[in-house]
Structure formats: structure tokens, C-alpha cells
Image (cartoon, rainbow over the protein chains, first blue to last red):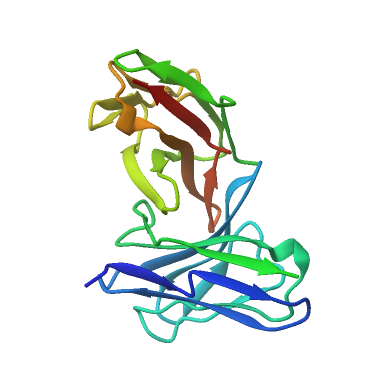
Length: 111
Length: 114
């Protein structure tokens, strides 16, 4: 009953590898979001989803892929990781697009 | 395009001091405005929000008023505590022309000294 969880919490990978970050919420919220947080940029929206099987691009979608086959899960995949994708990734969910509850984050390092 | 600008930090205050963190925005539509707080090692938590002009959001002694004429949403608290030390983010959401945007400022770190 943790609400919204992310896994793994920490990940180190190498350039060119595929990485999937998981996000799971137990509230049955319709909306889910992925952000990246970088120093000097605040949070930037990568992708969002209004419901299962509905996804759309945010501000910085290049290099990322998402899917949402079930309401409670919203995985984010880096198809071929690059050093510029080193960041802290936050997932969020909400009943509406004006309400977001954030997960604890995943710190990803790409070597 | 839409954007959010908030004051640079860090802001250092003594306990019980008055807090103001400035936030201004630009938007093409009629955005909703938010303040989030982030404690070390954690995700963001919604602190307060306002969905239309002249609305005042408030929570835990913090408040902010949606000022359309000055495109501002400044965060205030009358008496800060050490436990308020965190990073504060101003944000807007805007759904215009079929495109959804959720824009965050770069964050302002607040440090409150006992």
C-alpha cells in the first residue's frame, strides 16, 4: 500500500545499453507522468499518459519510450542510453492532470 | 512558449522570519499554478495550488495568490521553522491547442537556521 513506487532506486549502466525504469501506483489514478531532474533545469516532462494505452510526448521525449498497458504501471525505457541521460527520474500520478503525487525517484548514471 | 521563473537561491533565514519566494510565469493559455516542496532524497510534494486568477492557495502556513495582472505566484510564510528547510518549486500546467504542458521552475533552496 505504498502509493507510488519506483524501481530500481539507483542504476548504473553503460552507454548503448537498454534500461527500463519502473513505476507502479496503487491508487488507480488515470494520469501518470515521467520527469527528469537536472541541476539548473528543474524538472522536465518526458512523457505523460492520460489513461491506459494513451501516451503523449512532453518537453524532452527524445531517446525515451513509454508504454501503459495497465493503469497502475508506466515503465520508461531508454533504448540506447547516453551520458546525457544521466539524471534523477521521477514518476508521478494523479486523478486529474492538475494533481500529481510523486514517487521517490530513480538515480540513473550512464557511464 | 510557457515558462516559469523563480528566484535564485539559496535563501537563508532565521527561525520565525518572514519568507517570500518569488515566482513569475509566461503562458499562452490559462494555466493552473502550483508550489511543490522537495526534502532531501525524496520526491516532490504538492504544497498548494491555484487554478484561476485571484485564487489563493494555502497549506501548512504557506500561501500564494494567483496574480494574472503581474503574472506572479509568490510563495509566502509568516514565520518559518527549521523543518521548512527544503527546495521549493513553482510550476504551471497548461492545456492549449491539444498540447499538455507541465513546466517547473529551477527550484529555490531554503535554509532556516535555529
